[in-house]
Each structure stands twice: as C-alpha cells, then as structure tokens.
Length: 230
Image (cartoon, rainbow, N blue to C red; front, top):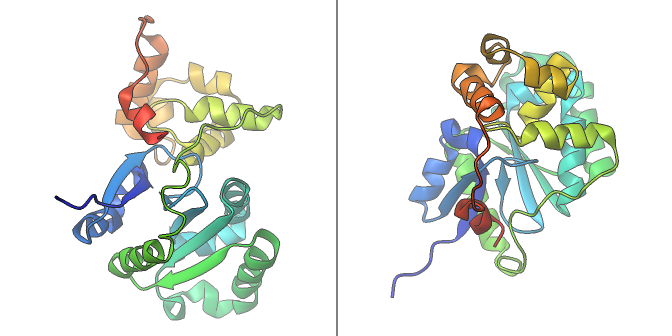
C-alpha cells in the first residue's frame, strides 16, 4: 500500500519561490491556498512566514514585519520566521546591526517568534522538512486551515472583506487598503488602477472585476475549500 504523503499548505504567492517544488521532491504534498497569515502552515499550531533577507530588512524599517508576526502569533501558538539570504552580504545590516538584531530580539521577546536563517530556497525547503519531522506528534490533531474568527474591529472586517476577492489574501488586502484607503474605493477602482498595485497585476485585476460585476448565480460550496478545512 502506498504511503500517504504528508500535507503542507502554502500561500499561492509562494509558487514562484521554488520552495514548494523542492518540498514536493522531498515527498510532501503541498497544497496552495490564499492564506490569511503566513506562507506555510505545517500543523494547527505551527506556521511559517518566509521572507527574503532584503524584504525582511525593509519590513523592519517600515514596520510591516511587526504587524505580520502579530497576526501570525495570534493565530498559531508556534510562529516561525524563515529568512532567506546571507546576513553578511546585506549593506543595511552592516551599516546598522543594532537595528537589525534589536528587531530580532523584539520578535523573540514580544511575539515569541522563532527565527531561522537559510542561504537559499533549497535550504529553506530542507529546514521545513526537518521541522515537519519534529512536529510528528502534533500533525493530524487539528485543521491546518481554520475559518477566520469574526471581529467587531472595523479594520479587521475590512481586511477579511477585501482578502475574500480572487487572488487576494491578507497581505494584498492590506496593500490594497493602504493604497485605496477604503473597501468601497477598491470595489469602484478600474482594472488599470487595481493592476498598478504591487502584487495584483492585470490578470488578478480582471478576475476581481469579473467577480464584482458578474450576475450572482446560486452555487454549492466549493469542494476545494471544504478539503482545506478538514
């Protein structure tokens, strides 16, 4: 009897990173979804936010990383930050190591985030593989993806509303709201206006407008969503 491949859920935007391809080669079953937080969900308790070193350093200076890990740690008891790149080669780190390591210290002490550094996507996949081996006891004890908890906070309601658009997860939803300021402005935006937002592009903009403007037709719940909630 063929052994069942261990399942990992990855954010759709991770397809281009090369990490999911390597994980598949290592014997895992990688399924893609529009994750609300994080880039890889390993168990009901553990998720990973993967960043290139350049993006990680930039996110320290603009404060994005603290919002992201706050959301990650609020949903997963064991949040992990995986940073891909060589710290010794980054000029910003060399210029001001205090800011860099101070941010790492804050992530550990304030948010309980474990940080792993890797050189490339191959080692990132290897790190995830080894993590999965150590998480054997907690796999299968809860759903990898859970439905979002309803919130009375308007900003979270806005994020959930926009993240439900096709191809738009929580990360792009935040970016769209930062650009257009309100959900209504996003819904009223033209395809060219939506396409200008980094990470959206014309293809996603067209899908968004189609969903917003196409006449509603009764449909059953998608099997793929039910599968992710198992």
